[in-house]
Image 1 (cartoon, protein in one colour):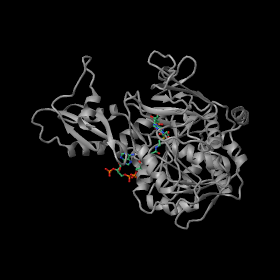
Image 2 (cartoon, rainbow, N blue to C red; image 1 turned 180 degrees about the horizontal axis):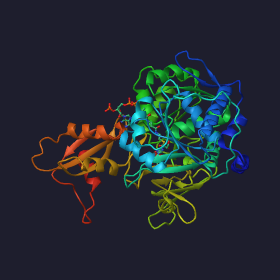
Image 3 (cartoon, rainbow, N blue to C red; image 1 turned 135 degrees about the horizontal axis):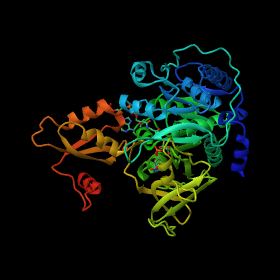
Image 4 (cartoon, rainbow, N blue to C red; image 1 turned 30 degrees about the vertical axis):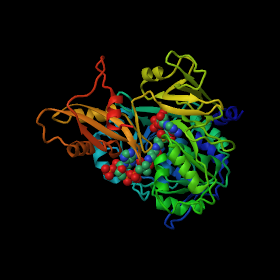
Length: 505
Ligand code: MLC
Ligand code: AMP
């Protein structure tokens, strides 16, 4: 019912226009920290209108890409909504990405405009064939915006692309997930409903805004309901604790919760006005779930999602929130678990998780074959996650079919790191695995086979080479040297043996 309504509401509008109908101009959109003035929903509308006018004056038209790699700020969000209003495709990048990573995204996405931090501009200018403008961490833009705030929002169909978010791939090359206006609407509506969002809720926002979690879930829910966001530029435990008493909702990755629990100031008093804590993007350890409950008397709502699908399942607001489980499918999301022969799993054994619904993306940017591979004939998306279903209908994520490390809520594909290590002179081959880590959940670990007598190759030399070439979060936290990698009869590296050896239980 809800989703039928969502579809008809989007007709001839875009996701922003639907949000606009739900927010009031005189309500605070963003409460800033450090005594900076409040930003109202009227400001969001006026500023996004000016930017949309500017983008149009620059000659950008529907479907063009705007690539954005800037620090988190209210202005960053104005740009996001301006793109939606102008029918442009918003393409956010992790600020940790370095030169050759950005160069790949520019060549693959062919943006019509890049917006970046001033320090990155000369570098990106070297390889981008489009204009490169800057927005600094205070929200100052390098050009003058028009004064005209009125803007006639561009009409969008359900499957018009609102954003492209890159996700890494098993081949080592990131793929752009094309997310439509209808995907955004369906997911924010079903989550609002599932989490019983109220207009009066105040969202304490400490996530980055270049991923689904921070950009879509933690921003859309307040905006579609016309609620206030307390916007923190980064996750800092002391700052989160300081603003919790003025908030009602907090969303985090498990590392955020581990770090909050390590702070003695995080207690029942700090959380007394809170209605909801949610966790996702990586598995939440039962130990963290329990410790959180004991410390705060609140129970974390764990949910499960992906860049390609938005949110799929959630533990309930009313009803049992099970530790180690990600809950039941959200409204409008169909979920099934199949064995390796594609037969439905009928008991609680683990199998391959597939999802279908209006939340599921349109496909990978300019990769029709890859897109076709990831969908079944009847339209289910193969998540690559291994899941099981209990007798109460709760899903638990048991593992992954894909060779993927999730560190502090960020995905890292070993293949990409191995390719960089293998190019270091003196390295014969390498294998990259994830090992349990108390802070990040999993930590990138490299196992390297070096040529004989390469005394210059050490853990720190490999780490510093990686740091110069790839984003810091992907850099191996540890490097081990071995004489050879264990392989099976097919010649495939047996990563399970490496994991067992380096992390004996
Ligand atoms: C930073 N570093 C990391 C890291 N983040 N290393 C491993 N894993 C990470 N996630 C490294 C940096 O390179 C640096 O290394 C050092 O840690 C300090 O950097 P920092 O920038 O000060 O880090 P910090 O602020 O502490 O960041 C940690 C974090 C952040 C956990 C707050 O990573 C974060 O916000 N994670 C959330 C990501 C997220 O939003 N995921 C959602 C994806 S969407 P050095 O060596 O230079 O000191 C998705 C779908 C879904 O998955 O279901 O939601
Ligand atoms: P991303 O590609 O960054 O969107 O990450 C999506 C992946 O994160 C999923 O395919 C899962 O493997 C993982 N993930 C997200 N939420 C959870 C969760 N609550 N528990 C376990 N894994 C999760």
